Length: 497
Ligand code: LM2
Ligand code: CA
Image 1 (cartoon, rainbow, N blue to C red):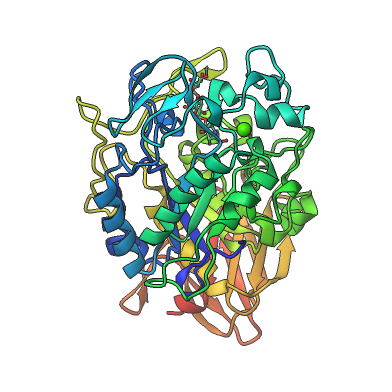
Image 2: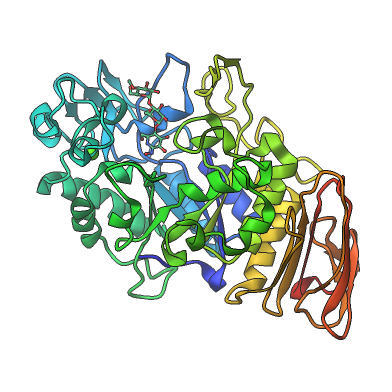
């Protein structure tokens, strides 16, 4: 389904990429619950191949070995504990499910949970899957079984994506094993799924699997609740497969969104902020209710996936905060924020040769815990973008504005914009290089003093940042210098001083 099953109609989730389950549980209690985050997308929890060359890359988790919950993020008990503790805080868990394929061709061994596999005999004893459970080269139609032509829908769905052994999802047995895995996660209390590589699966096969899913666990959800489904379909146009083929099943990851937002904030391709007034559907993206939107994701922040050099990440922190603020303020799509780990890039020939580097780990390859310093930000190489004040306060903004459309759009014809969300919230952004935004604008809000949640916080009835005064006519004088550290002002009904 398209609705996210969040508690209290919360409007945004965060991808805690490669975090350990124990750290996510703690983060739900100490941060995500209190700040109004609706949920967490977690990395694939099922047993994966152990890749040692390169050494423990993040992408080994996209090479399933079985559906036992045993990875560098933790085991079955850790996972259950996390789901329970997060739900208790009103924070949902969405699982990244890798069901298009098992691991890459070549070799044999044991997965992170100890299950045996052999890619020549196609034996995955932990499931079990065997030779009959994979698409053969005949149905695929290429000589090496791999996908070569994205203009051919049959190849894209029946051949191997980067040599990953392609499951035969037309098989009743295979569908049953996958449904059992998803139903096990549902029984634990998860709220939905991010479906990996959905473009590489036939919509009919996916419909058959989703049709076998149980209702959500009534310990946490109203009876009859259905899992939230958002499918990773990379569709920038120009290929055989369109994301519209999947929207009856749930939301799709709208990759045009982050790519275009990158162009707009970087002022490339002739773009400017004034063009954002009809962002979303007006730009050829999916309908609001069918879209899951994000500035960057775990793939395109490192040159994998789609979007290329336009994608904004934590490395472009000023523009990144501006793009995130726009995303969280603008009423389009269901929002996912990215929370990353740091790695040193190594650019050669236009490519980052370190794009494989896995999460912070000790010498034995164990993922390091996330430690929080006294600034409330993270150490040990965890970026925690979701904890940056500007980002986390915009999650509250989106919750406060929920259900209210965009009004009072204003722009200077170039790179200064402002708009309100009904009478609930107001934002102004100045992306001019030199000139200040200096104007008296309609905020839609009732009169009073409001704390700008970008430059500070409302605390003990006072504001630690800029205070904005809204007059009896709803107008306020807005001044944002061109070189402001964060050239954004955001106020809302709950930030009234
Ligand atoms: C996805 N969406 O469709 C994920 O978001 C993406 O991160 C996954 O690719 C992909 N699908 C498959 O689940 C990543 C990564 C690839 C990596 C695969 C498998 O972007 O680079 O491929 O996971 O781990 C790696 C090697 C590749 C090799 C393959 C199989 O980079 O060169 O292909 O393993 O051995 C010969
Ligand atoms: Ca496939």
